Length: 313
Picture 1: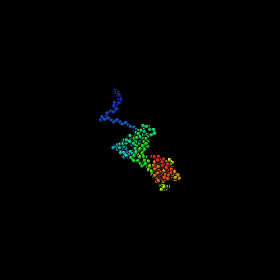
Picture 2 (picture 1 turned 180 degrees about the horizontal axis):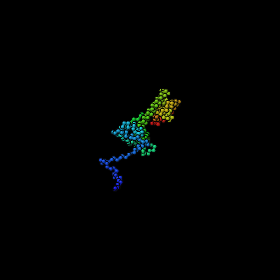
Picture 3 (picture 1 turned 30 degrees about the vertical axis):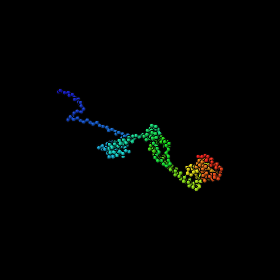
Picture 4 (picture 1 turned 45 degrees about the horizontal axis):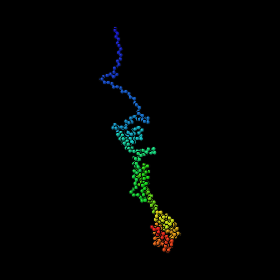
């Protein structure tokens, strides 16, 4: 009996790991298992809820009802504001509008100068608000009508313009201050006039009580005393602004009465008459205190008359 030797069959490794199978189809490649990744941490280190962003939009791209309430707690303070928007388009539009408005508000603005500002910065600010380059630029001039008792002073208005320019006032501010100042001065002038009128009326009543019908004579005697003493007769004229007052007039008239009219200069001298006019007044005016003495043959009076005529005038 012959014994046959059979070689063992070595296993054959396929040359292609994916061998064709019945029907020529290729088996699907097994899916590679994935490992879930950790959620992206929020700024504060806390993980965001999974899928929160997927629940705020509808398939149509609108915000879902109550979408703002689904936002993380970081948006808690903004939920009421965000709830006003129904979609991303309206939210973006509002953001763009706000940016445009903010830029428009800053166009043409200059920084208000402070203690550390340079002269150039101050000059830029003053120019921006309308301060003229020079004080003359304010164009200050008197109004068409000033209040009674008020006069215009060009020197004072020039000083005001210089100060206004130094501190950076605008023309509108200067105009308003000028209007206010004129009004105040006018009111003060009115108050002063009223007080003066009341004082004059009180003085008039006092003159009447003190002198009565003898007032003209008292004035004449007092003025002759004043003239004789080298003073101005107007100090005893109740109608003159330089009138010394009722008491001074009463005192001077009493002094004149004690001296006697013959010791006083003629009343005509008070009227600043010339020498010839004074001589004529003695000769022709019966009320002249020397008139009677002249015609009585008083040599001293006669000599005075001749001297006055020689003065002429």
